[in-house]
Image (cartoon, rainbow, N blue to C red; front, side, top):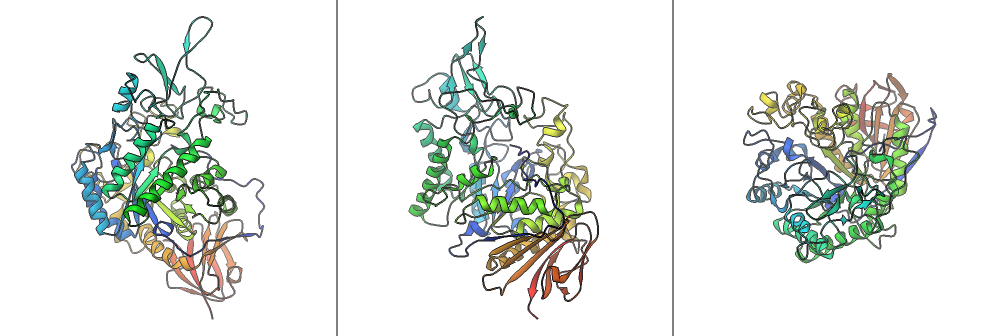
Length: 580
């Protein structure tokens, strides 16, 4: 789901404020996932192997060497399960099979085998909140078949004084309008947090809980390395079905708009945290019994920062939840943001997360406009550097490694069910723009396929923005990205982060080791003017440039001694302190 108003913006910005904050992460017992770069694939848009217009698993297999070349550690696949594809595969009709347009179970087994040969982990999306209305469970639940009666959230209608039927309460769908749909055959309403083709599963049912663990076991036994759990805050609802109050601070006046209500009964319920802790225990037990590397458990929770921290586990670590819950607090970055916004966000995220847990950083995904479209092209490298420089886990959405921008999609071409029914607001609400096909090269359809019409249009920008072009250039966003992943491994020994704010437009981060023998700086001019600063504002020593943005004055290998540092708008670089 699209995350809105996620960036924590500082109110009352004070220029030239000098401040800093430190983050310390222990290097002891660092597991594979704690130092990893995860790469998200939206399979429908990645690579079409059979020229039917839709990306598929064999296409991913064909391109596995790209991940090795880029340097990432794990690939995470958005849903590949059998589905009517009403909502991009998040409406699952069979949790134990592959969507035919994506391939077969044998194709997926080959993907696992070939990826593991390349030392790549493979993580699957897991969608426990809801299924498709075409799932056999839902059909049996409609018929009240024994054992399936309570697989979904059903409720009786309410009738007004004139006998008109209405939903049980005022709960809304994330995609607007009532979250309740009447089923004539069963004679009750069913609840759906998303489309009415995605009925909510009832996780209060012990049988449904068992189904979820059995499904995870099925894929774990096949060899997957873990799961990213979708829409976690929506899993449980209030048992009493109480109406939700109006949110007086939302500014929304349309009672059918999701943001019109405070979602105190349909989001982040206490049982949800308990379930997450139980699933973490289940995965840890699986690893303990079966051996091998840790099976990763990641949660998507677009909610307030305190609740995100709770999805990690309890503050004292007595109950563990997700290995990490996605940090969406940088996903709203635009050129309007300044270094103090970054500092405030990093500080807020760190202060809310107990030090026993691992930080994670991302600037984009399949539900939000691409970072290369939210910021100027000159800033692309700076944001990639920031995500890699900050301590912990880095997450890349496909195409970010070379600066792919949003594609061009009209309402008539759109596929997003949350947007296509209202062309007036399509440009503001659709998730199709960030889901257009991956731009491999400058051949027909950007190398996505051999020319068949694609499920979403290929961007018109592909002739000059594509992976192959950037591989051939002497300096490119992709080559910067490759260097960053190599540098990320060097930074592991420098486990203290300090965020400085000595200039209103220059983001300044420092990573240092406990003894001070390894120290690294990251500088990024986020402003509109050329900036000059004495090197003494950064360090009293000399500095060796390790990586720089494509248009920066400084090149990797340059040494900066007793001189002023000049940064054009968008310039960024990482340097290592040299003791002289």
